Every structure is written in C-alpha cells, then in structure tokens.
Length: 252
Image 1 (cartoon, helix red, strand yellow):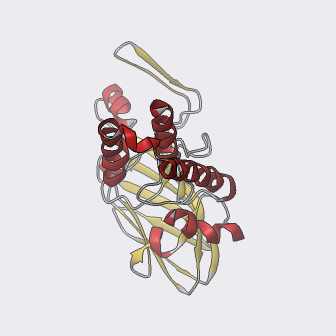
Image 2 (image 1 turned 60 degrees about the vertical axis):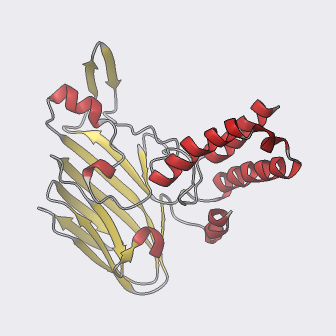
C-alpha cells in the first residue's frame, strides 16, 4: 500500500494543471518544480515511508488529485499556444544515429503533455529571456542533422484578457522576424525591435508568426511594464467565466 499511495501522490503532483503555478505539474520545466517534485518528494517518500500511512495525508493526496482532475476538466488552458515547425514547411524526415525521425506534418514537438498537437506543440507558460528557455528541446535532433544551422517557424496564438486600458508589449531578439496581430492591431518586428499594441479592457486575440534563426531568441510579453503572464489572463482559447476561478485552483 505504501507503493500504491506513493504512486497516487506522484500522479497528483505530476498531473498537468490548466492553471499556471510554480508547481503545476509536467513538464517540470521550472527549476523549483523540477527540484521539488522531481527530486525532493521521491527522496522524502523513500526516507519517510510511514508518512503515507497517515489518514489525513491520504485524504490530502486524494483531494489534490481530484482538484487537478477538476482543474483540467473546467478551466481553459492558461498560457499561449506555441507551434514549432521546420523551415521550409513540409514533411520533416531525418536519421540520428540510426534512429529514424519522421514527421509528416513537419512539426517539432516539445513533449509537453498539455499541448494539443497539431494545433500546439508546446504551451508557452512564462516569458523566455533567452533561447535556452524556449520549449525547443528538438534542437538536439535538428542541430545534429543540419550541423547547427537553424531555421524554424513558431506560431503563437491565444487570448489576453485585460481589465483596464494599457500597453501590451512583446520583446523579441535579433534572431527572430515576427509578424501578426495583437487584438485589432497589426504588429511586426525585425532585428529585435519590440512590438507594441494599445488595448482596451476586454478579451483580445493574439496571432503571431515568427521565423527563428541562430540563437538570439527572446519572447517576453508585458502589460503596462509587468510580466503579462501574471498581470493579465493569457489562455490558449477564448476564456470563459469559469476561468476567473483559476486563482483558486492555483492556490490549492
């Protein structure tokens, strides 16, 4: 039973949440959750196995798992939808150390369980200050196949809900050429110029397409000078009224 309850606990912690938080489950791409969920909790389970036999602990574990299940059932996925593909567009096929790689749609996946491929290959859940922060683990494959020459397309889509008038800014880097729309406004960037859009209160659609080369990448959206992932509600699909409860799920 200790093994069973350890498995239930890890399932509850790893279950991907639609509400973004520092401990929102896989893919464990943040330092805190990787250290806590991926390392500290398994060690503590091994060292303190009698802890899982306590009735209150088991109630808490089940409550957490049910909360995660309800979260994914009722909330719209927070963050933005990111879709990486190889350039030029078309099927992608190569062989790495005798391992065949075949993607008929040319998608470059990030192994993000929250993503709904082919619409999204990753959920953009925070700002990326540099290329190594991007959910682009596929570069281990593509760099090997192309000798380090990079040419990717990144489509970013979603919705931003804001409660007041303000300025939405997206900072990018010189390795990105971007076009698209934020709300009703067309935006574009070349050589690292930031993109700006003045928004009224309400929900606004984001549609961006970026061409990425080299290693100078950055994607940092802000709202009135603050991180947009905390200052606004960003969702992959149009948010609903129930999504206002995301803060409750985040706190749990």
